[in-house]
Image (cartoon, rainbow, N blue to C red):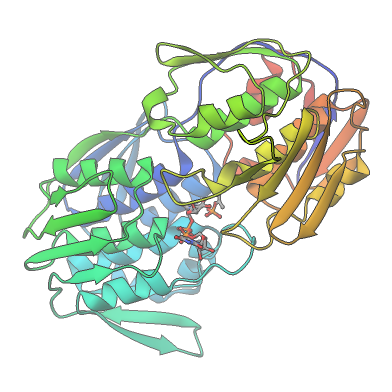
Length: 434
Ligand SMILES: CC(=O)N[C@H]1[C@@H](OP(=O)(O)OP(=O)(O)OC[C@H]2O[C@@H](n3ccc(=O)[nH]c3=O)[C@H](O)[C@@H]2O)O[C@H](CO)[C@@H](O)[C@@H]1O
Ligand SMILES: C=C(OP(=O)(O)O)C(=O)O
């Protein structure tokens, strides 16, 4: 397992271009299964999760061609459904969360699919009920096979239905949407998730001939069609990477320009960093973070201590709370980080405490951070990255610390951040991959 050795204390200066969004790319790549025609996708990030999904589709028989930098064409004309029952399929799909989203397209087009146990971050219970209940509402049957530990799904015909989702699940909404686009009649999904990932998926599906309205809201209406065509689609910049770079710039006292961030799709993210006292300048579609010697967390208007908590879009994404937390350790002021959605995502704070950060882990969901205003720089340390976003938070901590740190298990960072060491070293970081 590879590691990063990070020499802390270097300020960065220069431009960074965010990669394509991991969580959008995973949905979009699964959607290529809905048509036998060619789909061209641009701005696909070159990261472990996405590459594993592309390989999974190749193994299923999809013709995949690399047609340019971060660009691929997909042609799902001849799918080998028998592959879904192989050990190889189970192993590969178990390596990433996004693999669960092949179910919707397969049921829609072939009337059968298999739900393996999906992979992804081990950050608490990650149930799939929303996926099951929604696809069942469309008329599919689920049968559990205990020896193989997977669900086999069959459907003679999918029929549109009204459904109120039990929670606004991101991958759940994507899966149901992809199943519904070719169902007979009208499907209405209320309490749908509406992250930019889903808005982009809906636009892509409409470009393929689907009839989806309500895009960007939590009420989607889908008029089923018989056939979807090929299309071209460009993945948005990764808002989580943009947020990670904003936090990294402030914490390391760097001066960074983030190019082409698709500002209007960042929602509440820039303002949330501003509430941590960070100067986030918008220049057209770029963001400039000037060098900060210090930054001060706001209080709420009544003077009480600020809370940052996650919520489904347009609320604050849970995937950036680890970054807000680490950045707060070097701010002036205090903040409560409340991770409502996941129950095992904050335990990495022990490593920050070892580095000298002032944090009280109140319970698995809440951590109070007492910022030290750069008065006490963090100490270098040796750590293991437990999940993708804790991984980037530890990298930010190590880059700002005094001395040389080591982070093991960096596969967890490579899962979501393309060539992170090379891109940061180009503008002044000192990160060695060993
Ligand atoms: C591949 C992918 O796209 N992964 C993302 C996706 O995962 P994923 O789609 O797996 O996450 P879900 O949206 O299903 O749910 C995330 C967690 O939040 C809880 N929950 C969800 C909705 C809600 O209204 N209330 C609630 O408590 C769920 O029970 C679960 O514990 O969305 C998550 C939530 O933004 C992100 O962290 C993941 O990066
Ligand atoms: C939790 C995440 O990813 P996944 O759902 O793929 O585990 C994430 O991107 O922060």
